[in-house]
Image (cartoon, rainbow, N blue to C red):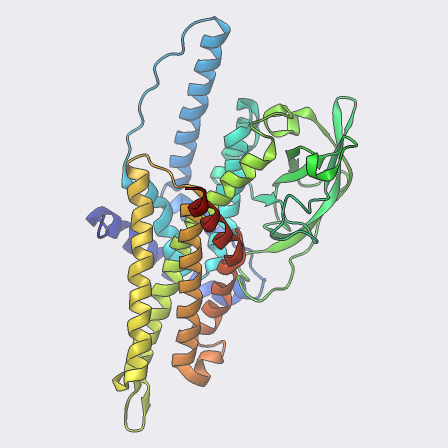
Length: 413
């Protein structure tokens, strides 16, 4: 894939119009926390039929799982699956809104991705059919807001090693305790996937990692108000506190403590998904910064000429364009891999995330520099984009963690 198809380009233009009409006028409210992003996101999904597509795809999946379970109960061979058509348009339909939203409000993509992506994926990957029906369908359409809770105040990059949140068996139930921080959608989540360790009296590093599904308002479960932060203001972030929260086995994802190495595999799978999506987010930031910088270089006059005629400014613009081309090619590769049914390794997803996040941050900061004093003012949009871009180097694993995953993979070969 070397360029957007005609159909994908039409979708981009349609999404761009929606963003211009429905998002740009509300940037100030979104930035200052006066307007949670969820209603606008739901309107976008409904406008482009993405919610109906998600429902149809989910219903087909559940029908297939039900059919397989019935055949197994009868002792019959599994019926042959109907092959779903493959194509880049499916991946493109997901990535195009990400790119266009990130040109204006990257935080909205984070809020949407964690709810529809990470939280739903955690349940779909390891949950029972009943759990998928109970929680995942509403998350995939954003009828419910989801949060994926792994990070703790003392953990950060060492998410599993430093994890202190626990689940203790109590008859047929579990008692959950602990706290989480930096949780996207935490303040408003209707459904939260809570990741913790099973307290069996053994050493913490030997304990199983389990995932439970919590609903807003459960006794002992407290969701904080949104935290103040450097950027991504349109993505509400909060803390979660659990004090003797009692849950049944029906809330344990998979309803077993032995689901493919417990919650570790599921958490790593969601990290891979999140890292691959950062390239599309980075592309949106880069494209917007480049467009704003080119226009400013044409309009701004210093020393009797437009600043775009100075070689140092031209170098900045040229480097931005190189970054745009490289990150766009990574997005194209993601779509192409989806088309052919291939999936990335953890190292590949880490490499994509590492390069894209760095490129977006560098381009955004150069855009501020190119704008000079104006770039430091919030009325010029590059100021917001520079603040928003920085977190791409931190969440879903810091740059340092990505480097470790890439290097370990190389050294194993």
